[in-house]
Length: 163
Image 1 (cartoon, rainbow, N blue to C red):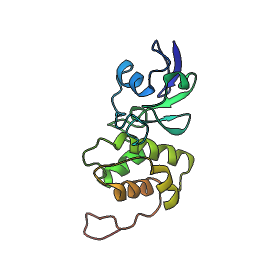
Image 2 (cartoon, rainbow, N blue to C red):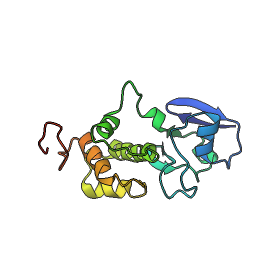
Image 3 (tube, helix red, strand yellow):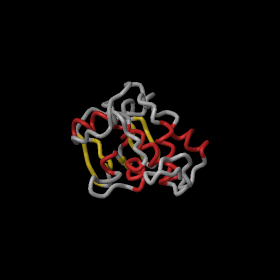
């Protein structure tokens, strides 16, 4: 029996300790936000926040999170009350196919929780392990900057002017 906190709630899972956290969360707790991408911890689709750090969970044994805090995309905001970052994602029209978005949002959330005003280089470094096959990287960066309260550059203003 492995005990940990999931989105602020104490939980326990009677699963093998070497089962990847991704599968425990998806199959045991029925939270489908984090996705299986590469299975090697390289693409970021499976990212969750573990004790404040964006973590690839497809390769993380659930035993490694015993007595730790895990936050999934379901714990970041709700459809009726988006987080500031999620609202910036919407405002900047970030998603296309959407597959990578939960991992992107998790990595960006972990960054902003640690560093509320990151530089461009810090954003690039924090997001470097998250792959977006649709290539929305410029919009991802703009959304992070918007959520951080930094001035966004070259963002389309629906009133017809560049912001």
